[in-house]
Every structure is written in C-alpha cells, then in structure tokens.
Image 1 (cartoon, one colour):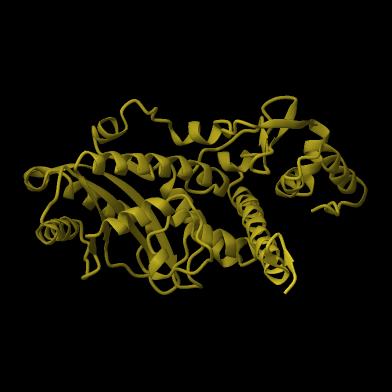
Image 2 (image 1 turned 135 degrees about the vertical axis):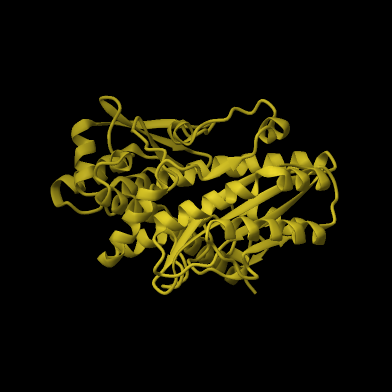
Length: 381
C-alpha cells in the first residue's frame, strides 16, 4: 500500500474530505447567523437589532483577522446586545455566560459542594397567549423561591444559590411552552430523592396558585453531575444538527432550531421566516414583544460573588459590544463608508468575512469589485 508520511494515501484522502465537509458545514452555520439576523431586522425595524452590525460607529469599518484561528470579524459597528432576537449577539453573549457557569461549577465542586440541574415547566395548549402564560409562569417561579417553605428547603439541604435560565418554544399543536432550567449549587452532598420530592411539591403548589397545572414532567431533577456538565458545555454552542434528541434536550434554546414543526425555538421561527414561511411572523413578533427587557440568565443573590469572586459582571450589551479577544488580531484593512454601503446593499456581510478568513486584503478588494460590477459574490466565496 502506498504511504504518505507513514499514512496510507487512502486515509489521507478521507481525512481531507472530512475536513472539507466539516468546514463547509461550519461555514453554512456562520452564514446562517447573518441570514437569521437579517430576518429579525426586517421584522423589527424600530428595535436596536435593526441596526446591529450594520450601523458604523466611525468613518470606517475595520476588518479584523486572527492568523492563529483563521477567523475574521468586524470592528467599529453598533451591536444591539439582545440575547432574545439577535443570533449574532446571542452567540457572543452565551459564550461568555457559558465560561462563567463553567468557572462557578468548578469552584463549587472544588470546595466540596455539588451542583444539580432542575427543569420547571407547566401544562399548556395552543389557546394560551404568551403574555398571560409567561406572566403566570414567572410569578409562580418567584413565589416558589419566597416564603418560609422555600427558606426551610434551602437551609435543610444547604443550598448556596441558583442560576436560572429562561427558555421558550412554540408549536402549532400546543402553542407556547415557557420553561426554566436551573443549576442548583449545594454546600455538600444531599439526599437527592428527598430534595426532588419536596421541591416538586413546592413547585406544584406555587404553580396552582397562579392557575397553572403540571404533569409528571413539570419538575425534573437530574441527579447526575454528567447532566450538569453536559448542560454547561453546550451553553452557547450550536448542536450539530437541528433535531432535538435526548442528548440535545438541554442545549441552549436560543441557538436550537427546533424539531420539525413540533417545538420551534425563537430562532427556529426565524429560520422558517427566512425561508419565506410568513405565517410564523406574527408568532415571532409576539415572542419579541413579551421577552423584550427580560433577563435570560439570573443568579441568586450573593452566589456570583461567592463563586466567581472579582470576575466583572458585564451586561449583555457590554458583552456584545466588547471587542473579540484574540491575541493575534490584525487589521486587514478599513472599509470606507461607500464600500460598507455596497456590502449592505447586497447583504454580503457574512460573505465578506468568509473571504477575510483567507487573511488577504486583495481578495477582499476583488470581492468588492465583483459586487460593484456584477452584484454577485466573489469567486473566492
């Protein structure tokens, strides 16, 4: 068998083919974020997302390149900081939050503590409006964390605090489905079955007080560290496909597309809208209206400082606006306002960055020339 660098030629060819296929898939995911963001911008022309990564903050827009990662990004553009309606900002914000969660879990376990994952949900149907259902759900969640019963639960089991993540999906059959994942930090080992029994009853009682009902899946308590590690590792990262399986059930909702037409996430709705399915527009607008201004991730009082110390607590807007941290960042060149307007005209922001990943400014100039003369993507795209 013919060898190349002590590896059979056939294996080399297969490896190259796999790498090309993987890069092609990653490229489509990168471009999809720009496409979904544009769909949100068209739907929400008066919101900040409409100007996100479009409006320059100075006379020029910098095209930055990282030789080590072969990645590229823009500097000098406004960002909206919306984790709810902007795929571009959501990705960056969630990545920061994932890093913080990893640090918190690691610190808690290193100190002899334990971390568990709980999921809260309620029964729902297609006749429930999001405004009423969400208000009742959040009120029930607040109630379940207050009062003597909640205090007694935390004291009995040594609860240091919690980090809650709000999520929502929608389906034609069952309507809106708000739910909450919660990382629960304990000072030490606990009787997991007893905690689950007491916490389930408390959640059920609180939900009923606000006219909500829950079935056996209304409260789920994952009693394995693997579930926590899996959740944290996936926070802010896209799954390999758009199908929900048992392994991806707890992946961050805002970066999942949903499973067919059963349960669509907000960005799953955007995907359908971007494909021309206009019947989903009113659904997404309802979601955008009632989630605007709400926090996606909430730390209980004192937990963040206890586990993260002096790590700066940046707002979503600050995280989105912060420059991408790459030690080897170089500025390939500066786009003049006329060049940037040309890019916007042809919705070519994502395509230009794909060209910039080659690290050659002349290729970007060729790309711009093709846009100006033919209105078509460069042959390098």
